[in-house]
Amino acid sequence: MSSPSIVWLRDDLRVSDNPALCAALDRGEPVIVVYVLDHDSPEIRPLGAASRWWLHHSLTALGAETESLGSRLILRRGAARAVIPALVAETNAGAVFWNRRYGANRAIDADLKSSLTESGVTAQSFTANLLHDPWSHQTQGGQPFKVFTPFWKAYLNQHSPRLPWDAPASIPAPATRPASDDLADWALLPTRDWADTFPTHWTPGEAGAHERLNDFLANGLELYHRRDEPGVPSTSHLSPHLRFGEISPYQVWHQTKLAAGPALDKNADRFLSEVGWREFSYHQLFMNPDISTRNLKPEWDAFPWKPVSQARLRAWKQGRTGIGLVDAGMRELWVSGTMHNRVRMVAASFLIKNLGIDWRIGEQWFWDTLVDADEASNPASWQWVAGSGYDAAPYFRVFNPELQAEKFDGDAVYRRTWIPEWGTSSYPQPIINLATSRTEALAAYEAMREPAAPQHP
Image (cartoon, rainbow, N blue to C red; front, side):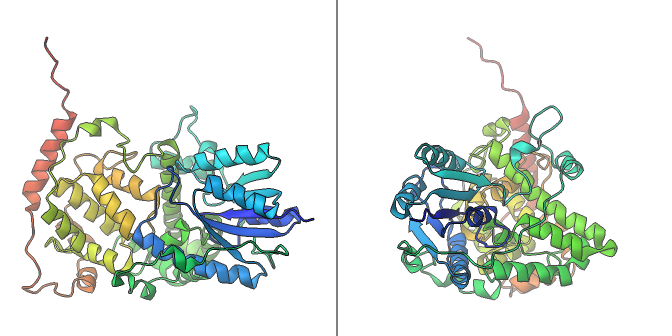
């Protein structure tokens, strides 16, 4: 009687360069590939609407790929601590393999590794979605890095990313395949038509990821030194593919190095440093699993946030603040599920520092509307802009969106692309005075930094 191996996929929806899948194949038994939609475990942050759209289409693509390799993607829903052991018992599996996670969800993995091992089932995890595990890269004093530049410099001096592994020629399925949920029953797709434009911008799945990387290396890398200009097609658009693990950072790293050559070395290094920022964000998540809700710098707990103006917050969400670069970014987000990175910083700064709205409110909106909403990069980036995170923008840095537009979108290509009424009388007037709100923000930061007055009996 066979004793199948289970490959439990999470944020690694690919068949190439997948260490957990390779380990299962090396074991020499039939392989069951399963994805568990776990919105029930307390350690899991449920996906936002845009991410659920992406997941639906990514699982569709992965299902077709596993079918072509002779297997089937099994879908199950529920708390993983219960679903995985139940699948083991149902299939008489002798091993469960998965690739590591680094947030609060790693507690689920640790519990399962312990319980499965105690019951005689092999349980192994692997490094697959980062270039290295957070605990393997620390300062000379044995502490986690809190500043990006020394973090990345030390990584480059100490590590060399392994070569990626090829996709298998086939995946041997068990004689009796376990039952699977119907993906449609998960109702991941939005009930409203707001995501109807997403397919014109994205092709979720492993094939789409590699097509995107190849296109960037052929056409975008030579322009990457202009990556801060949102109207220039110079960025990779790989972030949602990396977020769902449809492509590995090892594949991105080595294909970029191979394609760049001496002429584009500087652009390639700059691009790969953005892969490094992703790694740095995961280090922050590993050290602070509550990074999406807690200020990493405790002094920020005393920051005097303004009462939320729902009218102003709504104007920000809808891209109707009267501030062109902010509005263009927010409309790009709504139509495409993404936003240019420079504009993300400007839009976040405007919400936090001009409107005085808590960064967590903006982070949650991005979590719900970004197709690349990542449990590490999204909150780490918001805390960077606010000033409450590691290696953060100085508290006194308030991005001036008008100066940013002049510098990076001087010809208004980006603003005209996303704001049809740009330059006409129908475009709204600014909802706030930038200079006044900046002065108020600096006063609030100074108030936060002042020591509390001593308490007298």
